[in-house]
Length: 226
Length: 356
Image (cartoon, rainbow over all chains, first blue to last red; front, side):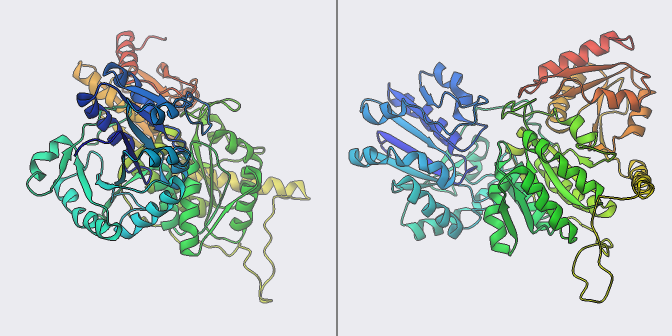
């Protein structure tokens, strides 16, 4: 799939948007010189792409985030620089949109320019193991709420269903049918099913467009129960 | 075991409360606990429950008192500054002998502080959190799964002893996502003949009140309440013992600090240090007996916390100051790193039983 100039990741919060956006930006950088990632999350106080700023800078990817992200300032501020991504056509831009309709409100202000240019992909990220998006129908409800707020039609679905460290191939397989149902309900293609690299081999012959995703963030409190 | 879902701590405790039969939630938004209210606002209307965003924290806790008076399961949640505002209501709940669950997803303080995680409301939670002689049961989860089980436990103990229970969480525990199995735990049925449910003209009215005109009467209520507290201290203390069998150093930590500490203990063990942990699950009642017993076994204790040594007092009291208690901490929204805790363990091990 040819990357569009602007790629958006949005969905129910906790679906994995931030990780997918980070991963996507890193891959874009392999093809294009000028790549930037914008953290437009105005909802989540913790666990932001801002946390990966140093790692991104090392790879030469510009991060555009609220100056308040990761600080004690609890303000839903948007980075002023974000407009540069929309205006400067030389940049390949990745936009990490905050969760649910409230998060997508931030997108609304950039929507006219993105739609006018027309060179974009907007992916609906889905994790069927999240409590309020257990079924295709529930995802449609969330999707419609986001569309009203964000004003940019989706172009594809990414099935990122996972239970964190406890994800098994069987669990991923159990969501394939739901993703297909979501595709039928929305008319959108399932462009990718994303899994941790260690699950890739077990699933690669069973799921089309399977894609291994690397998680880069590790926290000291992320204790693994034995 | 039921099927697992991936949930934030804040969402998991909210769903657990609903599963436990709570149909009344009153709150006022504050980071980092806002997901509790957000989740309740989506779920309660679908199941015939009541979600109400009050005009203030003080209004919310007084609404809790109202519903609790009727014997219905009720909760509120907030974060540190908001919990401080609820303090008067907590005292009234205790003074009226009313059960309720209060969730504190702690953030850095004092004052407005910050929105990053903290455990610095330890004194506030364990020392009564309001005026007058009283206690709350204080439960400290260290995983999203425990957010679920301790929410059930909180409602159960609150109703068993007719008193407020607090789930003392922190920003990290509230915001982090983990797979969780939403298993229904038991909330027992207790006598609620005291509840205000309408007399139908068939009985004398019940009165829920914390005002007593006769000091002798008020004194007796305090004596009776403290008799219940004594039973709770005797019977309800919960803790987890981790690698303590041959331990010479004992880490004491709860919540997010216990998670970091487990990683640090595993690392220090690889370096040959015999170290373990006692993780208090109830902060009140504090697991005094377990710590006192450990004091006869280990050379020193290390209190790992996101506060300025507040838990040290309880460790020293429990152990009658038999062994030194060192402090390994970060505050203001910072979390100790695994390396910092390992370093503290190694230095405690070198120092042995000598006073810090």
